[in-house]
Structure formats: structure tokens, C-alpha cells
Picture 1 (cartoon, rainbow, N blue to C red):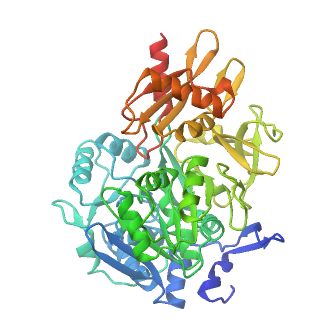
Picture 2: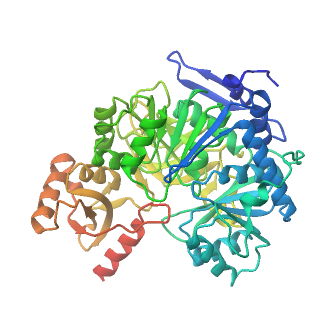
Picture 3: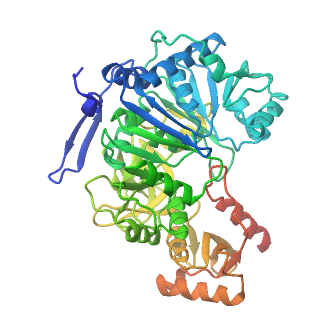
Length: 556
């Protein structure tokens, strides 16, 4: 094992090389058989440099807490002892519903140390959602925020599911629940290293698919190593950086942006624990705390732009990245005008770490997801699994060469059939489509079932949505195919308007002409529907399947 200062600590876990321009070229994870992020990264940095700042946490009530790596070591040990006291063992499924509370970090590290499987989840779940997840995964314990809407939904679910042996609340006590914060302080702050293996299950997410019930995506301990590229070469964070990623801890984006890779490079994560998002508050915090790198979905950047970024001192920002949905060039250009910063887009899934990205040192093309991460062997294939030529649309796949790769999920828990349908013939099929240009940059088209086939043309919704989003009347939109007796399908745009534009037939025509002028005429939306809101999954992804079904029912 190399002896390195914290600034170079991450080098213990990888072999890498760079091209002549200093851009990451190859990346090979290095780990021992018993690699465990909580012990081998957090506790080790705490040993090397105990006072190194790990987290700045604040909320919308003005409270602030600063945690060092030594704090994280101690509190995760305390939490591990607390969980063990209440019967949580290696292999147990434990759900974490902790919003942006700092207790999430104590709890997830503790579960890693025990060898229990953490299941982060959003606080927006309902009774029905909990019942499905509890039963599907065999959940035995839950650590939740004390917010009444969460407690009530969990308790209602427990009338139909008796498998929970322990329930903890954080940020407040509730009758019938264990008070996590109070009991934590009574626990010893040492915990003996458990016998965990790098290829054993560590983390599971219920993926918020746009069709069907959520799938259970299972990851092993090496998943954390896959996020080294996320932090070091996409977020481009130095050890003395302060990284703000906008995400609730219930989503995979939280561990992408404020846990694994960030702490492997020794930087500080900034956590803002708020009830309601307002662009002003977030911009103010970037200014106040001198955030150096920022990552958020394109929606957040759109809100910033609509809010107006004038009057905020954002000079501390050195780098900005985006993922979670496709980036419209208009957002890229406007943010650049305001800040002088280029947005570096990336792409990945709950099943993977960062797979495509505009890495540090490259020149991003507005609207492109970038190039394949050196961690993966990426290819675009047709319906028969054959690689397509540049310029042609196909499905993004990962060549696995018959082996499970670091960063790639273990499979869909308790669903071998689903696992085989996504992962066969040496390819993991992402279900997302794109095309590659002559320079090797990838351009997103849509989900495989989102592609519109009209009059012999294959039309991806994203390009049309990008054009519509540039019109000042459009706040949000979703483009889908609608049944047509002549063309098979026609393009339909479902649009949420900005407050200053009322719906009208004249606006429909204006938007149709606008699209015709901006892209190929055959792509314009022949049908435009104005709605108050778009149907979305719990994670905020547009449910185009619902829009398509509504169109199909109307056509009958």
C-alpha cells in the first residue's frame, strides 16, 4: 500500500494514465479483497489527518455544523454500535429516508461497517410505495426523518408489513420509534472491523423507471471506487475544494456528488438541508460559503437563469457540471454568459457510475454528453446488437466481456429474468439511445421506447424539446409520439407555459413555426397540448409513457 499525503490519497485505489493534453486516458481501479469505503477511506483519512474538514452542513433555519473526518469516523462507529445493539446484522436490508440530514452520512457509513445493505429512499414515498419496497427487498429496519408525513406513511405501511424489527427517527423523537440522535450519543465510538468483502452487496436503490414498478439495483463495495472519476476528473475537485451537489439523499446523485468520490480525494462536501427549493437561497449560499465546484440537474440551472443571476458574487465557482437529464444548449449558453463557466455534462444511471462525460481538460460541446469514461468500454448498437456507424442512432451499451466491472451493478435483486434481459451477450443494455459524431462525442436521443417513428423517420424527442425550451413561452415540455392513421405516429409536444403566456391557438401555430425554423421540418410537433404540469416519477423524471397512453386512448 502506498504511503501518500491526503491530497494524493486516492492514488492508492487506481492506476491511471493521461494523454498529451492532460486528459484522463486510462483508469484501472485497485483494491484489496476486503475493501470497504467506510474503513479504508473515511477512517484512514481520519487517522492521517483527523482535523481535515469533511462536511459543512446548514439548513434553512440558519443552523450550521462542521464535521471533520475524525467526526465522521466517531459518529459512524457510534451508529454502527447503535444498529448492532438493536439487532442489525451483516446482510440486513436497512432503508434510509433522511432527506438532506447529516445523520444520513453517519448511518450509511455505519451500515457499510456492519455489512448491512443500505437502501436510500426519498421522503416523498407514500404508504403504497413503502409496502412495495418493504416486501420486495425484505427490509428489516428503517432510519427516517422525524417529519410527520414520513412517520405516518411508514406506520401506515407497517399495518400491512410486519417485517420491520427496528425503526429510528432523526432530527426529532416520535412515540414508538428509537430516537437516533439521543441514543447515538450514549454509544461507544470504537467499532471493530467487520468481515466484509469488496464484491459483497453494499448498497441498493429502487430505480425510478418511467414504466412499471421500480427495479432493485444492487451494488457491491467496489461501486465507491467507480466514483473516483466522478469527483476527480468530472467534478474536477481538488483536495481543498468545497463541492455542492444538489440532491436529496434518497437519490443516487447524492452518493455520486457528496460521498464516495469526493471523500476519496479528501475534499469538503457542502450540504444544504432545505424544505423548499428557491433559486435565491441557493445562489446566496454559493456566494456566502465560497463554493468552488457545483453540480446540479439542468432544471436547477434553468431556475437560476429564470431567477436572474445578476447581483450574486459567484466568483468562487471554478467548475460546474450537470447530469440527471439531458442538457439543452440554451441553458449551457445562458449560464456561460452569466458566469464564464462552461457546463460539463455527464451521463450515467442508477445501475452505473459515470459512463459518459465531458471530463476535465476537454472542450465540451453544448448539448453533448461527452465521451466514454475510461472506466467503461462503451458502444452504440442497433436492435441486433451490432455497432453502428457515427451519425446513426442506437442504444448505449457497456461491453462487459463476460465479467462484472467496477461501478456496474451486480444485477436486479430478486429478478434474474430482468437482469438477463438487460445484460446479455457481453453487453449491458442501458435502454438509452444516442448517436456519436465524428469526434467521438455522444448526443442523447431518448429512452429506447421514446423514439418516435413517423413516416419512416426515427425522431428523438430531446432535439425537439431543446428547441422548444428556447422559446420564452415554454417552462417545461415533453415530446412523444401520438398515433396517426397515415404516418403511424406524429410528433406531439405537451407543454407547461411560463406565467406570462396564456394558451391559445395562435401560440400553437407560433411554436410549430418556431420548431420548423430551428430544425428539420418533419420534426415539428403536429399536436401541441398545454397542461398545468407534466406527469413525473417520484424522482422528477417525466413519465412519457403516461402521455403516450393518454394519446392512444384519445385516438381510440
